[in-house]
Amino acid sequence: MTEAQVIDIARETLWIVIKVSAPMLLVSLIVGLIISIFQTVTSIQEQTLTFVPKLIAIFVVIILAGNWVMNNIVVFMQELCVNFSNFIQ
Image (cartoon, rainbow, N blue to C red; front, top):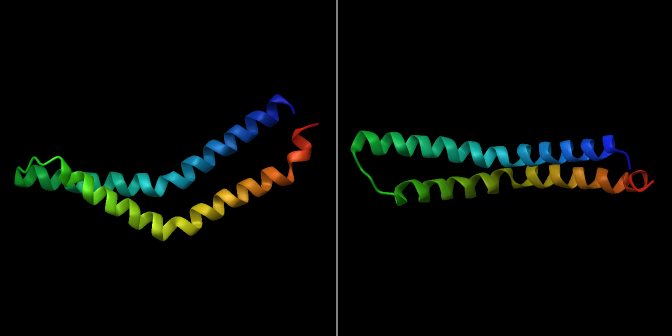
């Protein structure tokens, strides 16, 4: 296994991690921003007010995008397993 192959596998792994975590992170960011604006406008300073909506939004995204996330991970793992013999040479 050459250094180029190791770097390529690491690059692809990081890309998959970013790609499958992006929907949850973006939804959490948007919900947090909306709740923060609401708190600023209404002068409510409750810490748990941001946590619960973010948690619910992330669960909804996981339910909606779970199939897509698992498909990406499975395809990546299948590619690694198929090319495993090339990696050990």
